[in-house]
Image (cartoon, rainbow, N blue to C red):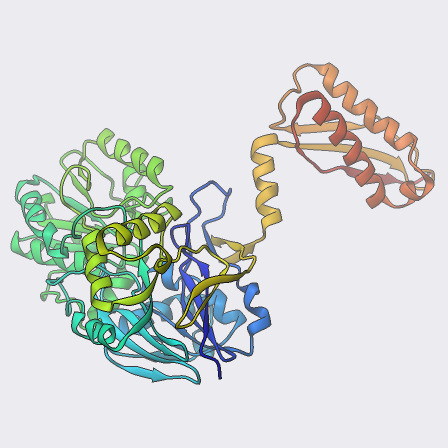
Length: 557
């Protein structure tokens, strides 16, 4: 037995999303969350990214469980990809597991995995770890912080949280249990940094209710509310205010409908009888009698709001007199798409409210005063900021140093892949793993992993174009049977026929001077042609197009 543990972030540090962390002690490893991310830069057809779990292959026999803090996609979205590789038990709240089941069913894995539902203050015992699930407030329901008893001491993982004493649904954050652990002695606090740059306290979910009431009172026609599908607190507010103002609610979008169905089935949502209507029923109502609760707060290409604003969603479009409420924060990387969406709504005569104009959204993450309250409750020996870009992790450290009085060495800044060794005497980075990410293309027929080489090739096609030389040669002699042809798309610097003639000359000369082995093996000849053209084009234009030679062999009569 050893009195030290290792913590290895696999995602979520220095970036938004892909939250995933390994904790290891005495030959046993647990995984906290398995989230997906949404690439901020264009990766040409890729929808999401997940951590590269191949980094854990050498520890396959040590992994004993996945522990989920809550059900947001950036914490559970990569679960199918992880479980396909490492089929271990999964623990989470009822709502979190229900959302995970939906994901696993899409991947045809639901019948192959073991899922355990736990409640607040439940404890589970593994070989080297004991874990207690502690209620915290967030923008969705049934969320946990984790108190993990290890051979080296207790570590507390906050998950995503804020200090909301008056949540719309469920109990507030369990500060009493957190303080109890603080009195017992906590070795390390792994603490959410998403809002570490924001002063003060994060408002309660209830703070948006007065604004919603004002908007509903003034809206002359239809109201369309777009929020994250998992924002159950916000869904309840829309349902309550709609009933208050005599409007029926139509829920649109597969993920939104699924979330509402799960939350209703588990008893989290209080939906009055006859409040919900189908799309056909909604179409028959007057504009001032209906509210649409829809997907598309981030202007996702196939979302309901995006289709309503740019074309039509099952026969309904944004029109004069509509009021659209974007009740969500803008995820970094989506700014331009949302700006275009807002423009399209205005073009069609809609009125729009977002968080920049009115208080229609509050964050689910701890601001600086929330961070102080959490840290003072837990009283850890060390703090490791997690979740967020590096500037947020750094500001988290600065705030604790200046306003909570923690010494520099007690707040440890780390990045994905760092191996942090913790014991009673020190917290230090002892190694670094190479942690990559895997891109996922979510098509209509399934989910395909896209490797880095494919992404690089797509990027190259976008920036430098594609060149296809077509060569017809004699199958027996390898001699040219016709002049080479050149097909080019998106290639810069190809103005005029002279450049194309030179490319054809290079191809012909390459075939003429090819060795006998290259003429017998078309793979070798293709590579020779590709390299000669690549060198010439780079010298002339600086471009690096994708070059795909085609060789046609013809026989002798």
